[in-house]
Figure (cartoon, rainbow, N blue to C red):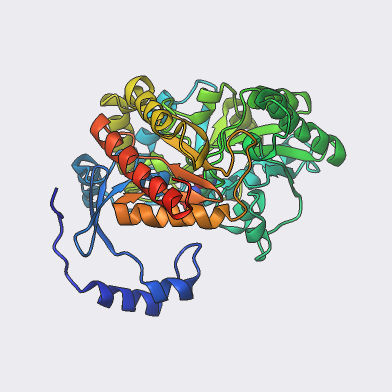
Length: 460
Ligand code: PMP
């Protein structure tokens, strides 16, 4: 495959200008400027090209978002048509437009029947900001304004704006001014690291029961909602034991606490189900969505509400003083429609469940099941994590696992594959359209990266 784009400017010229003006996400800017970022200029299906013509297999769907892969002409055509017809209008002046109406129709035809309404945003972070306000407003309308504490999880991730940062459980983000009152956290269900002598099932129950303890400690009359990702994404693609979600749901119902799933990564087919909570078999009251909604071609997110919540907000709530200039943006909605139709009509989600998902998972287990650097493999559908470990049996993690995983990720770039490292886990989430040969390439290149890392450590 040749690079689809001819370089317009020298890479170092781009890098110098980027260093002069641009603050990047979650990076030490000074160190990045010294190194120079890769300049990515084009993409097709799962492949990306940098400005120097080097090709990468993108094992991360961008940031868990390009579910349909790169280069989809149907999505760009939908955007162009909408830009020409109506590039913008708002939702404030007693107005709406066909694109957002048709998006809602399509979305709720794909969602389980107990959801009925959406609030649209531009991102996942905003979806979770809206979540905090909507949940509190819901309890206010029901005459329980003191029910306002949101419980999240340590090492959960819900975005980078203030409310989403506080709701998430990234302590280093809290320490940078990212905390708010009336937000609490419980531990994550990370059996490999924290399970001790318990079986995964015992540990899953114990982790879930922390929620009950926290609700009792705070008082059920104070707790508005529990918010969590069905599987943790940015925290390391951590899959909870099977016992976890049913117990969480039981506890939420018992104490009348709303159960809110952050589906920003898990939504739109990642696990082989349309939404990750369907894979785990529980029924949240709200779903935060973004990323795969548009396959990342244009920013769009939203908060999906159950009929029960929507009825209270719509029938009893009066004015909800919330709105974004770009809520339900017509061009984003048009792209989302084209994206969802493709995921549905081309059988992409069905294929992840029946064929390519199991194939990826099987390949990873065959290749890494006995690898000297890998202690555990988790995942389903098109999402997986390799837990690096010093000793698999005792589940001993490397003291410097962060550095080792980062090194592995860097070697991955050299080998032409983009996988991510989170603590001691190598994580991947390729586009849902990946075929068997693209999966073979992903696994083979990842193996090279993990092997080279093991060689450097003298373990291979
Ligand atoms: N929730 C989850 C689970 C996420 O993974 C992310 C982003 N990685 C967000 C929310 C925030 O989304 P955004 O970056 O679009 O604001």
